[in-house]
Length: 493
Image (tube, rainbow, N blue to C red; front, side, top):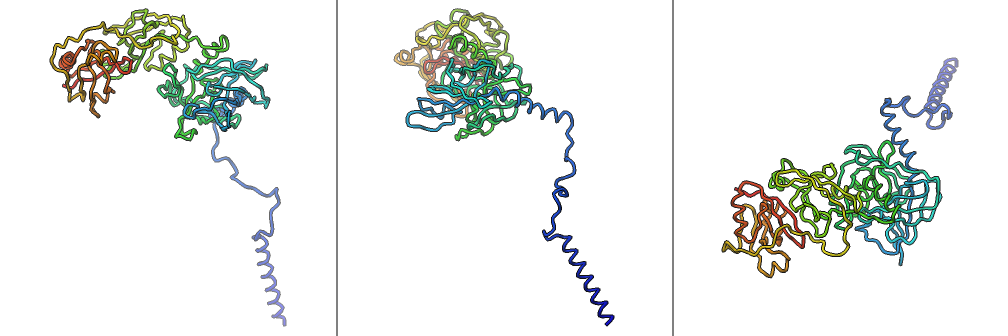
């Protein structure tokens, strides 16, 4: 009996131990108090140094400072937009009218707001929503379709105002922030870098006089960001967000484009003062200088922009400026792309003077031009500096093929001279693909007027020049669809 008691006691002890273990392990039946719950690592995995914390704080401070100066613009338009042109509208189609939205930058305490022309184009009603939730009716002060900029006005005072910086000082690789209202989501901030400067030839402005000299950024920009601010880490506005690269769904896929604030400031001031832009023009057609053109002209390096033609009655026609001249600088500032020159001149008014540094026949010369307003009507075709000549036909050949160059030409008929409004030249009849001629963008149907600055009256003249310049680059002056332009080609040996 005594042994049975001992065994029973041992069993009870074992059962107690097991039951106690079950209680400790929990099975979810026993929970710690809230004060006893500890989650997460005991310390941060990385200890931030002062520089890193300061860098992060810069974004925070800029967002706090600039965001109150960015507004949301809601527009009712009477004309249906073209989605291929209006990049940043967020539309809802209506039977007779349509709604769109964008962003704007407050540039004065009394209610002047800078935005894009395409945001307010054809607007019948404009509402502006401020950061503090107030909403105002707005009116259009003035628009400039050639830069896609506009100024609108609300009746308010003591508004937070953005600081407009200096876009000439920004550099590729510099951090920037885009602030606006994408998809009508107010006060959205994104960050990235300046990925390129001076972007042109994007065909975002459907006008041959359009000024495209964009800042490219990889900060996320989407529909509704139009008219918003691109700012640096000091909080200075360096650009007005205007367009995006898209794969067809009108949304951000990698980078966007902003109008430089220096250009925008000039436009805004004149729109506020006059309601319109009285822009001055040099009166020339210009093009890129590539390696072949540089060699053919004797330039030591590829630089400047070449004057393709001088417009009749334009400002340049009054001065000693010729087609074939290369503009190296304007008012001392180097220009190496046509849009760079356009953007600089776009900051000037009719009557202003600019000094052009030109390369001509191996020499550097300067010419001062008084800018003129663009004539809305009349002859805007480039004028040739070549005196009219009769076809001499000093060679019996009517056509020629330059196999190594990949080019075929023939003489012009009298009817063709009359039709194309030229007095001499040979017409290009064929350009072989993957040849020097195609690489330099010679065009079938274009007329060669000059070669190496020698007037070309017939095929014989062209054969003579090409024969004398084997192994060298030759500058060709061509005429196509009413315009003169230049191309450089290297003549194979």
